[in-house]
Image (cartoon, rainbow, N blue to C red; front, side, top):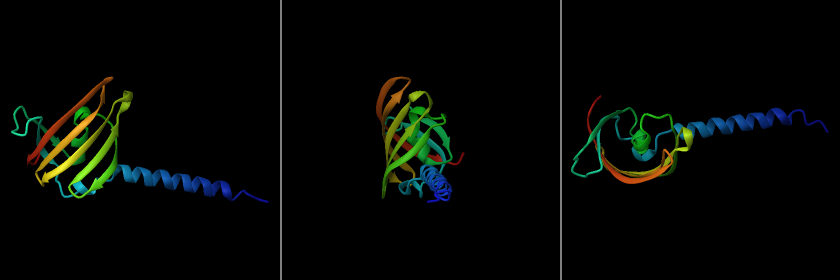
Amino acid sequence: MNTGWFRPLRLWALLTGVAASAAATAAAPAALRAISGGMWEVSRSATGDGAVRQCVGAPAALAQWQHRGRACTRVVLADKPGEALIHYTCPAGDFGRSRVTVITPRTLRIETQGISNGEPFSYNLHARRVGNC
């Protein structure tokens, strides 16, 4: 039995699966697609005390607040109207999991936890879009 044709088929299936996986990883969660990038104020306080301003192209980047500015890989674990659960991994073993809840198109609540520099973290954030970058 000649199985020479099977090897290219397996390679095609593997590459197609990898490409689909990469596309799924890169896609924005449906819950956040109506949310615009721009200048966001992020605070641990609902009143905005001590807010940090951050320009973000994609609001899903706010899910990795603890590791902002780092080259992390995000995967959407759950996506329903108004809420997304995002897991991300970064170099050096850092990672996090964030639940992003859409309060309004300009206001998000982010519950995040994970490991940063070998230490656990867990906190809630309030993010408010304040304009363009």
